[in-house]
Length: 123
Image 1 (cartoon, rainbow, N blue to C red):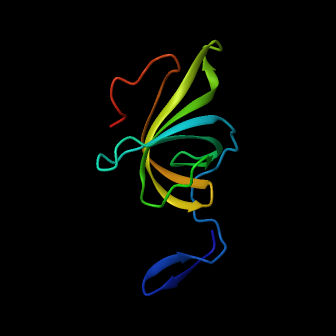
Image 2 (image 1 turned 90 degrees about the horizontal axis):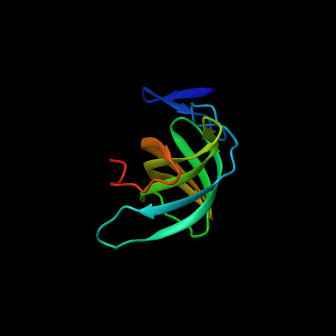
C-alpha cells in the first residue's frame, strides 16, 4: 500500500485500498440484526460481496448507517465433513455504507452448525 506521512501519521493515498487483509469474493445469503436496545429489534437480509479475516462487505435490502452495531448470521458456503451445513455468526460495526453496499468490521465471530439456534448473541 502506498502512503504519505502527514503530521507524524501514515495515511493511505486517496483512491488506494485501505484494508490490509486479503478479500475473498464469496456470495452467500445473510441476515442481520441491529444491536441497539433503544430502537427495538430491527432485522434485514442481504447477500455478501466479499470477506476478509476482519470484515464483511454485503448488499443489504435496507440501507444501514455507519456506526450501527450489527449481529450477522451468514450461510457459510463450505460444509463440515462435507455434509453438515455451517453458518458464521459475527458481531461488528458498520464502518462504511454506500447505498445498499455495507462494510462491517468484525469484532467477534464463531462458526456453528446451521441447524442450531444461537443460545445467546456472539458476545
